[in-house]
Length: 209
Picture 1: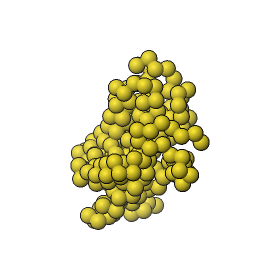
Picture 2: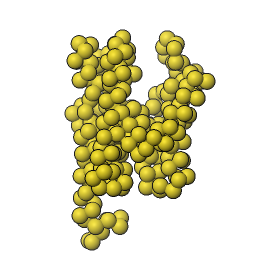
Picture 3: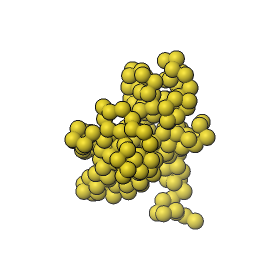
Picture 4: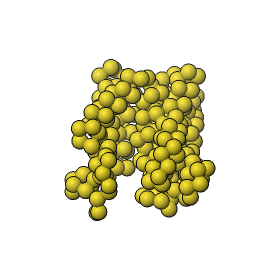
């Protein structure tokens, strides 16, 4: 077979390599590592057990949570930028998608990772500030007005692939749309709480389930 989905075997190998390297970057469990460095204990035994910045914040350490947020974003940004510079945008799309999947399904943690928003945002930054701006403006507007961080992120994640489609980047739009669907799946418990009126608002104490 000379090609797979229009790609020759050599190019398919390049795309697969970029995806794999992106996955390895995304699968680094910075939340767990930072919690250990800060002496906060095993993050899996704290709060929701999630490896993201939100759960790190439940330890009471804002610096640790900020560091986790930054590194979880950068592990999405760096593979995209590297692939863009060394290969092209198609390879960058593969690397970004790989990083996003790596955070959610990290091989080091038996494929039980985070919800993916921070890495998703980092991937957006890798493709340019305009993508990040679309997400950030919508998230901030909704977070301030509605005070639901999860709802703001869910709606903002839909707007970004729509923007990519608007500017004519079909492949990136499809990848971002796939990532958005996965974000919705990882936030299914948040969505259920939103429908029940039990989701915690920004600045409020958690409601009993």
